[in-house]
Image (cartoon, rainbow, N blue to C red):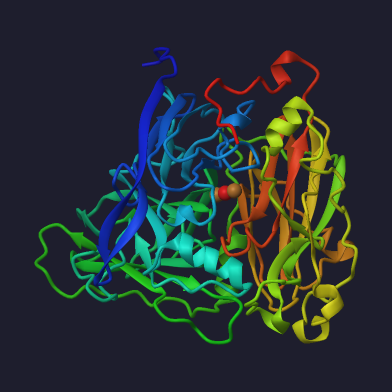
Length: 549
Ligand code: C2O
Protein backbone atom coordinates (compact mmCIF):
# COMPACT_ATOMS: atom_id res chain seq x y z
CA UNK A 1 0.00 0.00 0.00
CA UNK A 2 2.91 2.35 0.60
CA UNK A 3 4.52 1.70 -2.76
CA UNK A 4 6.60 4.61 -3.97
CA UNK A 5 5.07 6.10 -7.09
CA UNK A 6 7.18 8.62 -8.94
CA UNK A 7 5.61 11.87 -10.06
CA UNK A 8 4.15 11.88 -13.55
CA UNK A 9 4.45 14.27 -16.45
CA UNK A 10 0.96 15.32 -17.53
CA UNK A 11 0.93 16.68 -21.06
CA UNK A 12 -1.81 18.67 -22.83
CA UNK A 13 -2.19 20.56 -26.09
CA UNK A 14 -4.22 23.78 -26.23
CA UNK A 15 -5.37 24.78 -29.68
CA UNK A 16 -6.66 28.31 -29.23
CA UNK A 17 -8.87 29.62 -31.98
CA UNK A 18 -11.99 31.52 -32.80
CA UNK A 19 -15.28 29.73 -33.24
CA UNK A 20 -18.94 30.64 -33.46
CA UNK A 21 -21.28 29.63 -30.68
CA UNK A 22 -24.97 30.26 -30.24
CA UNK A 23 -26.00 31.73 -26.91
CA UNK A 24 -28.84 33.95 -25.72
CA UNK A 25 -30.57 33.71 -29.12
CA UNK A 26 -27.64 34.81 -31.26
CA UNK A 27 -24.41 33.69 -32.84
CA UNK A 28 -21.24 35.03 -31.34
CA UNK A 29 -17.60 34.59 -32.31
CA UNK A 30 -15.46 33.72 -29.31
CA UNK A 31 -11.88 32.65 -28.72
CA UNK A 32 -11.72 29.25 -27.04
CA UNK A 33 -9.36 26.42 -26.20
CA UNK A 34 -9.90 23.12 -28.05
CA UNK A 35 -13.32 24.31 -29.18
CA UNK A 36 -14.95 24.21 -25.76
CA UNK A 37 -16.27 26.64 -23.16
CA UNK A 38 -14.91 26.35 -20.51
CA UNK A 39 -11.71 24.88 -21.92
CA UNK A 40 -10.30 21.52 -20.83
CA UNK A 41 -10.16 20.55 -17.15
CA UNK A 42 -6.55 19.74 -16.28
CA UNK A 43 -6.09 17.03 -13.65
CA UNK A 44 -2.78 16.36 -11.95
CA UNK A 45 -1.54 14.83 -8.74
CA UNK A 46 0.47 16.93 -6.34
CA UNK A 47 4.13 16.57 -7.31
CA UNK A 48 3.45 16.06 -11.03
CA UNK A 49 4.87 18.19 -13.82
CA UNK A 50 2.33 19.84 -16.09
CA UNK A 51 3.33 20.47 -19.71
CA UNK A 52 0.90 22.44 -21.89
CA UNK A 53 1.68 23.12 -25.53
CA UNK A 54 -0.23 26.27 -26.47
CA UNK A 55 -0.82 26.92 -30.17
CA UNK A 56 -2.18 30.38 -30.81
CA UNK A 57 -4.42 30.05 -33.86
CA UNK A 58 -6.50 33.06 -32.78
CA UNK A 59 -6.17 36.56 -34.24
CA UNK A 60 -5.10 37.96 -30.84
CA UNK A 61 -1.95 38.02 -28.79
CA UNK A 62 -2.23 35.34 -26.12
CA UNK A 63 -0.73 34.10 -22.90
CA UNK A 64 -2.04 31.65 -20.30
CA UNK A 65 -1.78 32.08 -16.53
CA UNK A 66 -2.06 29.13 -14.11
CA UNK A 67 -3.87 31.00 -11.39
CA UNK A 68 -2.60 30.09 -7.92
CA UNK A 69 0.26 27.82 -9.00
CA UNK A 70 3.40 28.73 -7.04
CA UNK A 71 5.68 28.45 -10.10
CA UNK A 72 8.66 27.86 -7.85
CA UNK A 73 11.70 28.80 -10.01
CA UNK A 74 9.46 28.56 -13.08
CA UNK A 75 8.31 32.17 -13.41
CA UNK A 76 8.76 31.83 -17.19
CA UNK A 77 5.57 29.76 -17.14
CA UNK A 78 3.45 32.12 -14.99
CA UNK A 79 1.90 33.78 -18.01
CA UNK A 80 0.80 37.42 -17.51
CA UNK A 81 1.74 39.33 -20.65
CA UNK A 82 4.60 41.78 -20.22
CA UNK A 83 4.95 40.74 -16.59
CA UNK A 84 6.60 37.35 -17.09
CA UNK A 85 6.52 36.92 -20.85
CA UNK A 86 5.88 38.59 -24.14
CA UNK A 87 2.58 37.37 -25.56
CA UNK A 88 2.38 34.42 -27.94
CA UNK A 89 1.67 36.11 -31.24
CA UNK A 90 -0.95 34.77 -33.66
CA UNK A 91 0.39 31.72 -35.48
CA UNK A 92 3.05 30.98 -32.85
CA UNK A 93 3.25 28.59 -29.91
CA UNK A 94 4.80 28.23 -26.49
CA UNK A 95 5.08 25.30 -24.10
CA UNK A 96 4.32 26.01 -20.45
CA UNK A 97 6.15 23.57 -18.18
CA UNK A 98 6.01 23.61 -14.38
CA UNK A 99 5.91 21.47 -11.26
CA UNK A 100 2.78 21.35 -9.19
CA UNK A 101 4.24 20.76 -5.75
CA UNK A 102 3.24 21.78 -2.25
CA UNK A 103 -0.39 22.57 -2.96
CA UNK A 104 -3.58 20.56 -3.40
CA UNK A 105 -7.14 21.38 -4.36
CA UNK A 106 -8.79 23.49 -7.03
CA UNK A 107 -7.08 26.13 -9.11
CA UNK A 108 -7.72 27.28 -12.65
CA UNK A 109 -6.10 28.69 -15.75
CA UNK A 110 -7.03 31.67 -17.88
CA UNK A 111 -5.74 33.94 -20.61
CA UNK A 112 -3.75 36.84 -19.17
CA UNK A 113 -4.07 39.25 -22.08
CA UNK A 114 -6.76 41.92 -21.95
CA UNK A 115 -10.24 40.51 -21.59
CA UNK A 116 -9.54 37.28 -23.45
CA UNK A 117 -10.04 35.37 -20.24
CA UNK A 118 -13.81 35.88 -20.61
CA UNK A 119 -13.77 32.79 -22.85
CA UNK A 120 -10.26 31.35 -22.41
CA UNK A 121 -10.40 29.60 -19.04
CA UNK A 122 -10.76 26.24 -17.35
CA UNK A 123 -10.24 24.26 -14.16
CA UNK A 124 -6.90 22.94 -12.87
CA UNK A 125 -7.39 20.23 -10.28
CA UNK A 126 -4.61 18.98 -8.04
CA UNK A 127 -5.39 15.71 -6.26
CA UNK A 128 -3.28 14.09 -3.54
CA UNK A 129 -0.28 12.13 -4.74
CA UNK A 130 -0.27 8.39 -4.31
CA UNK A 131 -0.07 7.36 -0.66
CA UNK A 132 -1.97 10.45 0.46
CA UNK A 133 -5.65 11.31 0.66
CA UNK A 134 -8.05 14.18 1.20
CA UNK A 135 -8.37 15.38 4.80
CA UNK A 136 -12.11 14.55 4.56
CA UNK A 137 -14.07 11.43 3.60
CA UNK A 138 -13.54 10.40 0.00
CA UNK A 139 -16.34 11.92 -2.09
CA UNK A 140 -18.51 9.80 -4.39
CA UNK A 141 -17.70 12.15 -7.29
CA UNK A 142 -15.83 15.42 -7.91
CA UNK A 143 -17.56 18.07 -10.01
CA UNK A 144 -15.94 21.30 -11.27
CA UNK A 145 -18.37 24.24 -11.11
CA UNK A 146 -16.79 26.99 -13.18
CA UNK A 147 -18.69 30.27 -12.92
CA UNK A 148 -18.23 32.65 -15.84
CA UNK A 149 -19.53 35.81 -17.44
CA UNK A 150 -20.87 36.29 -20.96
CA UNK A 151 -21.23 39.26 -23.30
CA UNK A 152 -23.44 39.47 -26.41
CA UNK A 153 -20.47 41.08 -28.12
CA UNK A 154 -16.84 40.43 -28.81
CA UNK A 155 -15.21 40.99 -25.41
CA UNK A 156 -12.05 42.44 -26.90
CA UNK A 157 -14.21 45.06 -28.66
CA UNK A 158 -16.02 45.79 -25.37
CA UNK A 159 -12.73 46.34 -23.57
CA UNK A 160 -11.15 48.39 -26.35
CA UNK A 161 -14.19 50.62 -26.62
CA UNK A 162 -14.09 51.34 -22.89
CA UNK A 163 -10.38 52.13 -23.01
CA UNK A 164 -10.86 54.36 -26.03
CA UNK A 165 -13.68 56.40 -24.52
CA UNK A 166 -12.42 56.48 -20.93
CA UNK A 167 -15.82 55.22 -19.75
CA UNK A 168 -16.90 52.02 -18.01
CA UNK A 169 -17.31 48.98 -20.27
CA UNK A 170 -20.74 47.53 -21.00
CA UNK A 171 -22.10 45.20 -18.35
CA UNK A 172 -22.19 41.53 -19.24
CA UNK A 173 -25.38 39.91 -20.55
CA UNK A 174 -25.23 36.70 -18.51
CA UNK A 175 -23.41 34.72 -15.89
CA UNK A 176 -22.72 31.06 -16.59
CA UNK A 177 -22.18 27.70 -14.88
CA UNK A 178 -19.71 25.54 -16.80
CA UNK A 179 -20.35 27.75 -19.83
CA UNK A 180 -24.16 27.51 -19.61
CA UNK A 181 -26.20 30.63 -18.79
CA UNK A 182 -29.16 28.61 -17.55
CA UNK A 183 -32.82 28.80 -18.29
CA UNK A 184 -33.55 32.19 -16.69
CA UNK A 185 -31.94 33.75 -19.77
CA UNK A 186 -33.56 33.92 -23.21
CA UNK A 187 -33.16 30.86 -25.49
CA UNK A 188 -31.26 29.04 -22.72
CA UNK A 189 -33.53 26.25 -21.48
CA UNK A 190 -31.31 23.70 -23.21
CA UNK A 191 -28.20 25.70 -22.42
CA UNK A 192 -28.44 24.84 -18.71
CA UNK A 193 -25.89 22.88 -16.65
CA UNK A 194 -27.35 19.63 -15.29
CA UNK A 195 -25.89 17.43 -12.60
CA UNK A 196 -27.34 13.99 -11.88
CA UNK A 197 -26.88 12.81 -8.32
CA UNK A 198 -27.86 9.77 -6.32
CA UNK A 199 -29.39 9.98 -2.89
CA UNK A 200 -27.23 9.58 0.19
CA UNK A 201 -23.82 10.35 -1.32
CA UNK A 202 -21.26 13.10 -0.81
CA UNK A 203 -20.05 15.14 -3.77
CA UNK A 204 -17.05 17.45 -3.91
CA UNK A 205 -17.96 20.60 -5.82
CA UNK A 206 -14.92 22.51 -7.00
CA UNK A 207 -16.26 26.05 -7.42
CA UNK A 208 -14.24 28.57 -9.42
CA UNK A 209 -15.15 32.21 -9.96
CA UNK A 210 -13.92 32.90 -13.48
CA UNK A 211 -16.29 35.85 -13.95
CA UNK A 212 -14.56 39.07 -14.96
CA UNK A 213 -16.12 41.73 -12.83
CA UNK A 214 -18.19 40.41 -9.93
CA UNK A 215 -18.01 38.51 -6.73
CA UNK A 216 -20.66 35.78 -6.73
CA UNK A 217 -22.99 34.12 -4.24
CA UNK A 218 -23.54 30.39 -4.81
CA UNK A 219 -26.37 28.33 -3.31
CA UNK A 220 -28.19 25.05 -3.80
CA UNK A 221 -31.86 24.95 -2.82
CA UNK A 222 -32.55 23.06 0.43
CA UNK A 223 -28.95 21.86 0.82
CA UNK A 224 -26.19 22.90 3.14
CA UNK A 225 -22.62 22.94 1.94
CA UNK A 226 -19.39 22.31 3.84
CA UNK A 227 -16.35 24.32 2.79
CA UNK A 228 -13.18 22.17 2.92
CA UNK A 229 -10.69 24.19 0.86
CA UNK A 230 -10.17 27.65 -0.62
CA UNK A 231 -7.61 28.61 -3.28
CA UNK A 232 -6.10 25.09 -3.08
CA UNK A 233 -5.47 25.22 0.66
CA UNK A 234 -7.39 23.03 3.10
CA UNK A 235 -9.69 24.66 5.64
CA UNK A 236 -11.45 23.55 8.76
CA UNK A 237 -14.86 22.26 7.67
CA UNK A 238 -17.27 25.20 7.60
CA UNK A 239 -20.98 24.55 7.17
CA UNK A 240 -22.93 27.21 5.31
CA UNK A 241 -25.95 27.58 3.05
CA UNK A 242 -24.20 30.15 0.85
CA UNK A 243 -20.73 30.27 -0.65
CA UNK A 244 -19.12 33.60 -1.55
CA UNK A 245 -16.45 33.59 -4.24
CA UNK A 246 -14.56 36.66 -5.42
CA UNK A 247 -13.19 36.72 -8.98
CA UNK A 248 -10.10 34.53 -9.08
CA UNK A 249 -10.96 32.58 -5.95
CA UNK A 250 -11.87 28.92 -5.71
CA UNK A 251 -13.88 27.16 -3.03
CA UNK A 252 -14.22 23.40 -2.56
CA UNK A 253 -17.41 22.30 -0.84
CA UNK A 254 -18.92 18.97 0.13
CA UNK A 255 -22.54 18.47 -0.88
CA UNK A 256 -24.43 15.62 0.77
CA UNK A 257 -27.49 14.49 -1.15
CA UNK A 258 -29.63 13.91 1.90
CA UNK A 259 -32.80 15.73 0.87
CA UNK A 260 -36.03 14.41 -0.57
CA UNK A 261 -35.24 12.97 -4.03
CA UNK A 262 -36.32 15.76 -6.36
CA UNK A 263 -34.86 18.46 -8.56
CA UNK A 264 -33.15 21.50 -7.12
CA UNK A 265 -31.58 24.54 -8.67
CA UNK A 266 -28.03 25.56 -7.97
CA UNK A 267 -27.66 29.28 -8.57
CA UNK A 268 -25.02 31.96 -8.60
CA UNK A 269 -25.76 35.67 -8.50
CA UNK A 270 -23.58 38.75 -8.63
CA UNK A 271 -22.64 40.88 -5.64
CA UNK A 272 -22.47 44.51 -6.61
CA UNK A 273 -21.00 46.89 -4.11
CA UNK A 274 -20.91 50.12 -6.05
CA UNK A 275 -24.30 50.94 -7.47
CA UNK A 276 -27.25 51.70 -5.28
CA UNK A 277 -29.46 49.71 -7.59
CA UNK A 278 -29.16 46.13 -8.84
CA UNK A 279 -28.17 45.63 -12.44
CA UNK A 280 -29.98 43.14 -14.67
CA UNK A 281 -29.12 39.61 -15.81
CA UNK A 282 -27.12 38.57 -12.79
CA UNK A 283 -28.43 35.11 -11.88
CA UNK A 284 -27.32 31.88 -13.49
CA UNK A 285 -28.90 28.57 -12.60
CA UNK A 286 -28.17 24.88 -13.08
CA UNK A 287 -30.17 21.79 -12.18
CA UNK A 288 -29.33 19.11 -9.62
CA UNK A 289 -31.49 16.08 -10.36
CA UNK A 290 -31.71 13.15 -7.94
CA UNK A 291 -31.79 9.93 -9.93
CA UNK A 292 -35.13 8.24 -10.27
CA UNK A 293 -37.10 11.48 -10.11
CA UNK A 294 -39.38 12.52 -12.94
CA UNK A 295 -39.00 15.96 -14.49
CA UNK A 296 -40.65 18.60 -12.34
CA UNK A 297 -39.99 22.26 -11.69
CA UNK A 298 -36.88 22.43 -9.53
CA UNK A 299 -36.87 24.28 -6.25
CA UNK A 300 -35.07 27.65 -6.43
CA UNK A 301 -32.75 28.80 -3.61
CA UNK A 302 -33.28 32.19 -2.04
CA UNK A 303 -30.19 34.20 -2.97
CA UNK A 304 -28.74 37.07 -0.94
CA UNK A 305 -29.48 40.59 -2.16
CA UNK A 306 -27.04 42.03 -4.71
CA UNK A 307 -25.52 44.29 -2.02
CA UNK A 308 -25.48 41.84 0.89
CA UNK A 309 -22.15 42.83 2.42
CA UNK A 310 -22.83 41.24 5.86
CA UNK A 311 -23.25 37.79 4.27
CA UNK A 312 -20.05 38.34 2.32
CA UNK A 313 -18.11 39.37 5.40
CA UNK A 314 -19.49 36.57 7.56
CA UNK A 315 -18.46 33.96 5.01
CA UNK A 316 -14.97 35.32 4.44
CA UNK A 317 -14.18 35.84 8.11
CA UNK A 318 -15.35 32.36 9.16
CA UNK A 319 -12.85 30.45 7.02
CA UNK A 320 -9.83 29.12 8.93
CA UNK A 321 -6.90 27.02 7.82
CA UNK A 322 -6.60 23.31 8.57
CA UNK A 323 -3.28 23.38 10.40
CA UNK A 324 -3.08 19.58 10.48
CA UNK A 325 -2.66 19.64 6.68
CA UNK A 326 0.78 18.46 5.60
CA UNK A 327 1.09 21.64 3.53
CA UNK A 328 0.58 24.02 6.46
CA UNK A 329 3.51 26.16 7.54
CA UNK A 330 3.20 28.44 10.57
CA UNK A 331 2.81 32.18 10.04
CA UNK A 332 6.19 33.95 10.08
CA UNK A 333 6.22 36.15 13.19
CA UNK A 334 9.03 38.45 12.12
CA UNK A 335 8.25 40.94 9.38
CA UNK A 336 11.01 42.33 7.13
CA UNK A 337 8.87 44.58 4.93
CA UNK A 338 5.70 46.36 5.96
CA UNK A 339 3.61 48.04 3.29
CA UNK A 340 0.42 50.05 3.35
CA UNK A 341 -1.32 50.11 -0.01
CA UNK A 342 -4.40 52.13 -0.86
CA UNK A 343 -6.44 50.88 -3.75
CA UNK A 344 -9.04 52.75 -5.60
CA UNK A 345 -10.48 54.42 -8.58
CA UNK A 346 -9.22 57.69 -9.94
CA UNK A 347 -9.18 59.66 -13.13
CA UNK A 348 -6.52 60.56 -15.59
CA UNK A 349 -6.28 63.09 -18.36
CA UNK A 350 -7.90 62.21 -21.62
CA UNK A 351 -6.78 63.75 -24.85
CA UNK A 352 -9.03 61.59 -26.94
CA UNK A 353 -11.83 63.20 -28.91
CA UNK A 354 -14.60 61.32 -27.13
CA UNK A 355 -13.92 61.14 -23.42
CA UNK A 356 -16.98 59.86 -21.64
CA UNK A 357 -15.65 59.40 -18.13
CA UNK A 358 -16.52 61.72 -15.24
CA UNK A 359 -15.58 65.42 -15.84
CA UNK A 360 -14.62 64.52 -19.42
CA UNK A 361 -11.66 62.57 -18.09
CA UNK A 362 -11.04 58.84 -18.24
CA UNK A 363 -11.25 56.26 -15.51
CA UNK A 364 -8.00 55.11 -14.00
CA UNK A 365 -7.24 52.98 -10.97
CA UNK A 366 -4.21 52.85 -8.76
CA UNK A 367 -2.29 51.49 -5.82
CA UNK A 368 -0.92 54.33 -3.68
CA UNK A 369 -1.87 56.67 -6.51
CA UNK A 370 0.47 54.90 -8.91
CA UNK A 371 -1.54 53.68 -11.89
CA UNK A 372 0.27 50.63 -13.19
CA UNK A 373 1.27 50.59 -16.81
CA UNK A 374 2.49 47.33 -18.33
CA UNK A 375 5.69 47.56 -20.39
CA UNK A 376 5.37 46.91 -24.11
CA UNK A 377 8.97 46.23 -25.20
CA UNK A 378 9.99 43.39 -22.94
CA UNK A 379 8.52 41.50 -20.02
CA UNK A 380 9.56 42.58 -16.54
CA UNK A 381 10.84 39.06 -15.81
CA UNK A 382 13.26 39.18 -18.76
CA UNK A 383 14.35 42.65 -17.68
CA UNK A 384 15.02 41.23 -14.20
CA UNK A 385 16.85 38.17 -15.51
CA UNK A 386 19.00 40.01 -18.04
CA UNK A 387 19.41 43.16 -15.96
CA UNK A 388 17.84 45.42 -18.55
CA UNK A 389 17.03 48.87 -17.22
CA UNK A 390 14.19 51.15 -18.30
CA UNK A 391 11.44 48.52 -18.22
CA UNK A 392 10.32 49.15 -14.64
CA UNK A 393 11.46 51.19 -11.66
CA UNK A 394 11.74 49.93 -8.08
CA UNK A 395 10.32 53.03 -6.41
CA UNK A 396 6.81 51.78 -5.67
CA UNK A 397 5.54 54.23 -3.02
CA UNK A 398 5.42 52.22 0.20
CA UNK A 399 3.13 54.65 1.89
CA UNK A 400 0.24 56.46 0.32
CA UNK A 401 1.25 59.96 -0.70
CA UNK A 402 -2.16 61.32 0.29
CA UNK A 403 -4.49 60.65 3.15
CA UNK A 404 -8.03 59.67 2.34
CA UNK A 405 -11.22 59.27 4.20
CA UNK A 406 -11.75 55.70 3.17
CA UNK A 407 -15.26 55.40 4.44
CA UNK A 408 -17.07 58.43 3.16
CA UNK A 409 -17.11 58.95 -0.56
CA UNK A 410 -18.85 62.32 -0.28
CA UNK A 411 -16.16 63.79 1.95
CA UNK A 412 -13.34 62.39 -0.10
CA UNK A 413 -14.61 63.21 -3.55
CA UNK A 414 -11.76 65.57 -4.11
CA UNK A 415 -10.47 66.19 -7.62
CA UNK A 416 -6.90 66.61 -6.44
CA UNK A 417 -6.93 63.15 -4.85
CA UNK A 418 -8.48 61.55 -7.88
CA UNK A 419 -5.61 62.28 -10.24
CA UNK A 420 -3.37 59.31 -10.85
CA UNK A 421 -0.14 59.08 -12.79
CA UNK A 422 0.83 56.19 -15.03
CA UNK A 423 4.06 54.42 -14.16
CA UNK A 424 5.63 50.98 -13.89
CA UNK A 425 6.69 51.08 -10.25
CA UNK A 426 7.43 47.77 -8.52
CA UNK A 427 8.58 46.73 -5.06
CA UNK A 428 11.90 44.94 -4.74
CA UNK A 429 12.17 42.21 -2.09
CA UNK A 430 15.10 40.29 -0.73
CA UNK A 431 14.96 36.54 -1.20
CA UNK A 432 13.10 34.85 1.67
CA UNK A 433 12.06 38.15 3.26
CA UNK A 434 8.71 38.24 5.03
CA UNK A 435 6.23 40.82 3.82
CA UNK A 436 3.12 42.24 5.45
CA UNK A 437 0.75 44.31 3.37
CA UNK A 438 -2.22 46.30 4.61
CA UNK A 439 -4.58 46.56 1.65
CA UNK A 440 -6.87 49.54 2.14
CA UNK A 441 -9.81 50.24 -0.15
CA UNK A 442 -10.51 53.91 -0.71
CA UNK A 443 -13.85 55.54 -1.29
CA UNK A 444 -12.94 57.82 -4.15
CA UNK A 445 -15.62 57.86 -6.87
CA UNK A 446 -17.32 54.87 -5.33
CA UNK A 447 -16.95 52.50 -2.42
CA UNK A 448 -15.80 49.21 -3.86
CA UNK A 449 -14.43 45.86 -2.95
CA UNK A 450 -11.31 44.80 -4.81
CA UNK A 451 -10.34 41.12 -5.15
CA UNK A 452 -6.55 41.34 -4.92
CA UNK A 453 -4.60 38.46 -6.43
CA UNK A 454 -0.93 37.78 -5.77
CA UNK A 455 0.98 35.70 -8.32
CA UNK A 456 3.60 33.20 -7.18
CA UNK A 457 2.59 32.91 -3.50
CA UNK A 458 -0.15 32.10 -1.09
CA UNK A 459 -0.57 34.60 1.71
CA UNK A 460 -2.05 34.38 5.17
CA UNK A 461 -5.10 36.55 5.77
CA UNK A 462 -4.35 37.87 9.27
CA UNK A 463 -7.31 40.22 9.66
CA UNK A 464 -9.92 42.12 7.70
CA UNK A 465 -12.50 44.77 8.47
CA UNK A 466 -14.39 47.88 7.45
CA UNK A 467 -13.43 51.55 7.49
CA UNK A 468 -9.92 52.86 7.94
CA UNK A 469 -7.31 50.39 9.14
CA UNK A 470 -6.23 51.40 12.62
CA UNK A 471 -2.95 49.72 13.61
CA UNK A 472 -3.46 50.45 17.32
CA UNK A 473 -6.74 48.52 17.40
CA UNK A 474 -6.86 46.27 14.33
CA UNK A 475 -3.19 45.36 14.65
CA UNK A 476 -3.94 43.53 17.89
CA UNK A 477 -6.54 41.23 16.30
CA UNK A 478 -4.39 39.22 13.92
CA UNK A 479 -5.03 35.50 13.66
CA UNK A 480 -1.59 33.88 13.89
CA UNK A 481 -3.02 30.46 14.78
CA UNK A 482 -5.01 29.30 11.77
CA UNK A 483 -5.51 32.15 9.29
CA UNK A 484 -6.87 31.13 5.90
CA UNK A 485 -4.29 30.96 3.13
CA UNK A 486 -5.25 32.35 -0.23
CA UNK A 487 -3.92 33.71 -3.48
CA UNK A 488 -6.85 36.15 -3.86
CA UNK A 489 -8.52 38.21 -1.15
CA UNK A 490 -11.79 40.07 -1.52
CA UNK A 491 -10.82 43.18 0.42
CA UNK A 492 -14.07 44.29 2.11
CA UNK A 493 -16.01 47.10 0.49
CA UNK A 494 -14.85 50.36 2.10
CA UNK A 495 -12.47 48.33 4.23
CA UNK A 496 -9.10 46.67 4.59
CA UNK A 497 -7.28 43.36 4.88
CA UNK A 498 -3.85 42.46 6.24
CA UNK A 499 -1.89 39.76 4.45
CA UNK A 500 1.52 38.25 5.06
CA UNK A 501 3.76 36.05 2.90
CA UNK A 502 7.33 34.86 2.56
CA UNK A 503 9.07 35.98 -0.63
CA UNK A 504 10.85 32.68 -1.23
CA UNK A 505 10.43 32.54 -5.01
CA UNK A 506 12.78 34.63 -7.18
CA UNK A 507 11.16 36.37 -10.11
CA UNK A 508 8.56 39.01 -10.92
CA UNK A 509 5.13 38.52 -9.40
CA UNK A 510 2.12 40.66 -10.14
CA UNK A 511 -0.31 41.73 -7.48
CA UNK A 512 -3.49 43.11 -8.97
CA UNK A 513 -7.23 43.54 -8.80
CA UNK A 514 -8.97 40.57 -10.41
CA UNK A 515 -11.86 42.72 -11.60
CA UNK A 516 -10.90 42.86 -15.25
CA UNK A 517 -12.32 46.32 -15.58
CA UNK A 518 -9.73 47.56 -13.04
CA UNK A 519 -6.58 45.83 -14.30
CA UNK A 520 -6.16 47.77 -17.57
CA UNK A 521 -6.97 50.94 -15.59
CA UNK A 522 -3.87 50.30 -13.47
CA UNK A 523 -4.91 48.64 -10.18
CA UNK A 524 -1.71 46.61 -10.00
CA UNK A 525 1.90 46.47 -9.01
CA UNK A 526 4.55 43.76 -8.92
CA UNK A 527 7.09 42.30 -6.52
CA UNK A 528 10.57 41.69 -7.86
CA UNK A 529 12.06 38.98 -5.64
CA UNK A 530 15.83 38.73 -5.84
CA UNK A 531 17.63 35.44 -6.33
CA UNK A 532 18.68 33.49 -3.28
CA UNK A 533 22.28 32.64 -2.33
CA UNK A 534 22.54 29.26 -4.09
CA UNK A 535 21.93 27.79 -7.54
CA UNK A 536 18.91 26.01 -6.07
CA UNK A 537 17.39 29.39 -5.19
CA UNK A 538 18.21 31.17 -8.46
CA UNK A 539 15.83 31.61 -11.38
CA UNK A 540 17.10 29.44 -14.27
CA UNK A 541 17.17 30.80 -17.85
CA UNK A 542 13.98 30.88 -19.96
CA UNK A 543 13.10 27.91 -22.17
CA UNK A 544 14.28 27.99 -25.78
CA UNK A 545 10.81 28.61 -27.25
CA UNK A 546 10.14 31.57 -24.94
CA UNK A 547 8.06 34.14 -26.89
CA UNK A 548 9.80 37.23 -28.21
CA UNK A 549 8.21 40.65 -28.36
CU1 C2O B 1 -6.03 35.10 -12.29
CU2 C2O B 1 -3.05 37.87 -12.76
O1 C2O B 1 -4.59 36.52 -12.61
